[in-house]
Image 1 (tube, rainbow, N blue to C red):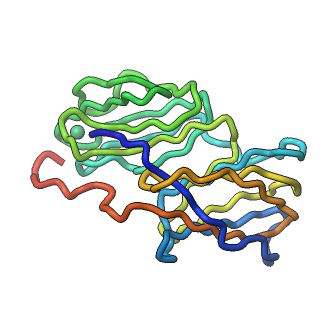
Image 2: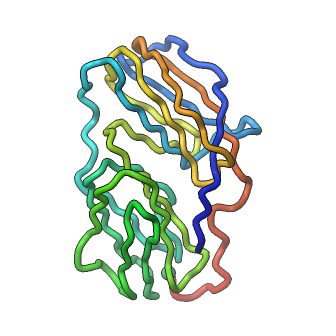
Length: 214
Ligand SMILES: [Cu+2]
């Protein structure tokens, strides 16, 4: 599987509408170029001028499993230093690897739980593949910021209890077509923002041709 650093350019549609939500919550909706909810987009916030808020604690370890001959989840967003487990839930063996500069590694053919998790100690984007199943792909977005979310199937991400102030906002999706400029956003309390990202329309993982081994 070859990772092509295509991606990204979004345009800001609109932002900041006061909602009835817990003070400081920031709800973000990401759409594709056709206005449809975009799943698996990473939303990264970097604090610019406010004291570092107390964000929801990110987990010390994260799991990217192999299940049904695919990686689950497709996109993970983690802070630098996080360890990721790669359990193989399938009956067939997988051989997980990355050639991405932010983390080069491989876990040679294995069943079940690998001996140890993989620690991601450098910010960047890592494309995962499997030597046995070329179609398998997944991505890990590693950031120095703890303010990270991945959009759900409704294109939604939510940050809770954020301090008011200026933030740098970055969106990223594996299939984005142009780089997206970082934007500064003023967060004044409960708010909702909407952004649009141009992405390639392609299935994120072709359906395996074989029905066994999963
Ligand atoms: Cu595999």
